[in-house]
Image 1 (cartoon, one colour):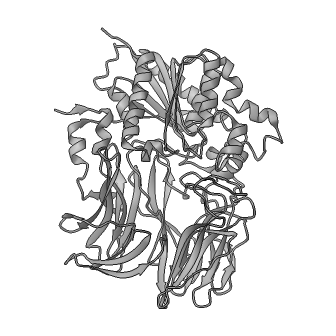
Image 2 (image 1 turned 90 degrees about the vertical axis):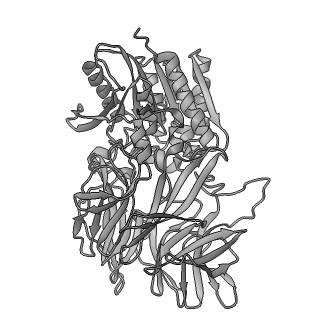
Length: 635
């Protein structure tokens, strides 16, 4: 008999990431990660999968980077005591030998002509454990211990002398490095006191170490760059169509004459990064690769992510059709293998052939076969602007239209992200406890055209209008809903704060790592001076004080009547913890029933990458708060 979803069920999830395929597509390697409650951390295992027999083998080695270098050999990177070891393992014999040892810790690397080129983050200032000092914006950065005056730089180590030299200038911060033959191309941010949104593309010759600016300088917000034939192809936006929410176009730079040209026009699909919301996956994987003179990439469209390709002339082809989330993929021997979330199933590896997919692993099958997972109902409605909005409903198990229920509106972060059909533990947990869970993708969300995503100057207005209309549609559809709750994280936390200041129709609210004060957010978030400035319509607080005050829920805290729980990580640099502290303090001042739950040493990624014990506490706090205010006794 299947069990209902419970808080600690997420501990059983097998999280897969970073799949790599050998050249004849007979083997794959990837990471499998699990929550380790005993050590309050995560366990990472390196797996080998025979793609023909489906046999899975756990290789007991620690890896930081890995890839196939031929049919039988994996090159992987391991860091031990501040040294980096490049090792080779034969997948048939399992023999391991050290290929290279470097007295440094680094990220991307490339071995060329008796030297190894690599990147690492370095601080231009002296570091001291007792203080942090810098003179740049941002001062802090989410996910990093410190940011100001730090750079990701390129280094060269001579393999004969072990001499290490820094190659890139101290004012240049590099990202998305790609090597080919005797060249390296990378995205560079030229920092002069402030790290800009826009960046440039640089090319370096590994023979003479000459670095050349080859793109328009600081014209585009660039997401990725690749070598393709005798060209550099990059994905970027000038942000004119929808600000930071603009979908990206493709450009190329001819390496023979360094002529830059745009190779797509009005592509208008979301191809920057996948933002399908779930708390059932984590781990980094590249969204792009080059195979047979085509650049492959992921787009988010409607309710899923899909594999596309483009050639140097701008010809685009679709290679997958199933809805859901593609989290990592690789292509060899004309075969595509991907780690996916499909419908309400957890991650597995699939072989993809256009609209035909074969699931070839069963890591999470036991969980799915023993739990009552609820399939969301998809509804489409038109907002007041006659735009189609996707919404979802999770009805509790054994839903009875003759009984009374409470409903919870969940709002996603981003705002350029989407809810889909895929498994989301938080939502499934609430539905398993008897709540009707409703969620939708209001304007500003991903998966549609630039016009839909453009909320500049209307940071909350469009979403508020769509969310309230959606709620009213649900209330009309379900006459037996007697109480309402609202919750969200990040931008969803901001919208929760907005909603409770504008109406009293919700009986309880939970605001997680949200925003309450657009003025302090502008000046304290690691991206506030970029993010807030853009979404507020390209203006600062000093340009239009009234607009900033209107968009700040803290300014209307005296109108709040809704009991509200605030959840935040104390080390959050994206939406600093003071955002919740301000709103909590204001509500307390006005005698609104409120509670604060702060997590030590947790960042903005608490929901996905927080300590397992903290995840359990967070889920229980959510359930306890809603049970206190929304529980209905049908006896």
